[in-house]
Amino acid sequence: MDKDLKNKMLAEIGSIITGYGGKSYLAKYVFSFIHQHNINDINLFTTLPKEFRTKLTEDGFFISNLKIVEKLQDPDGTAKYLFETADCQQIESVLLDESGRKTICVSTQVGCRLGCRFCATGYLKFARNLTAGEIVDQVIVISADSGCKINNIVYMGMGEPLDNYENTIKAVRILADPAGKNIGIRRQTISTVGLPDGIKKLADEDIYPRLAVSIHTPDDELRKKIVPAAKKYPLPVLLAAMKHYNQKTDRRITIEYCMMEDVNDSLELARKLIQLLRGLHASVNLIEYNPHPGADFKPADRDRIKMFKDILMQAGIETIIRFRRGTSIKAACGQLGADRLK
Ligand code: SF4
Image (cartoon, rainbow, N blue to C red; front, side, top):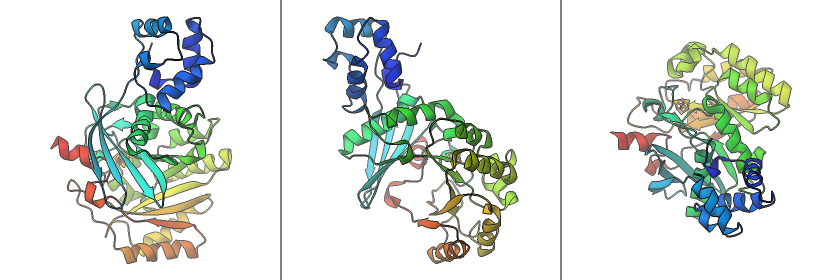
């Protein structure tokens, strides 16, 4: 049995406590010690009787905690954290400040299996999935370190969240719990490169976090070159899963399109994208590519991105542009870890 209390939902902590003959209401105290007060020592749970704390510790229960290895601060308010896990794996998270709205971009895996050509994490070897506790802890540690109230979570750091499905969904539930961080389900976004089975599974959940799907191009042949997962899941298969998600959940999907010069920024592709998205309830985020030394791609010209946006908007597709942030601190996901590995 997993003994990390940070990896447990409130109800699971309740079962542990009642299993020891304790009152179930104590679970809320334990959960808030961990998630609201960042306490990682069972002996400091003063609301629990001392004998009970001793028994939990003797039986191997513990609270994992990530260690900050490095923190880089950009003048634009973006902060990047490099963490070390208990087994000495390194992962990254980013704190974004957009007009006072604080968003944390969390990692879900150590490395990534999917190897997208433009992504710094794609060049790192996959080591393992993160536990729900390790995903949640990125938020606990960053909010404690920065003193910020966190408004939003995006599962968009290192790793593919739908390739670590159960732990990611569990993290969403833990972070949404009012006894803990209380970050509502609708303020959490799962960002996937497009795994159709995971998208369909998500549609069957009883909770609906926001869903963002990285299309990056409406051209299947080009997509196969830059997103190797597209060889297994071509666009028609992915689109069918997204339409199923629309129908089942009645929720809009965000299409992520990372704009790279002379790769996927032609206006012809903008028109092709309109055709592709026909019949899908979706909006589009055009993201200015954040370059890194490992990959031979450049950000698209800003004027080109604006023209691309205009074409989509004229077709009635709600579109926003996200210009790069944190450029002085290697904020492309996986970049800091990749540099340290070198
Ligand atoms: Fe993995 Fe996402 Fe990077 Fe692709 S873009 S390699 S899915 S982390």
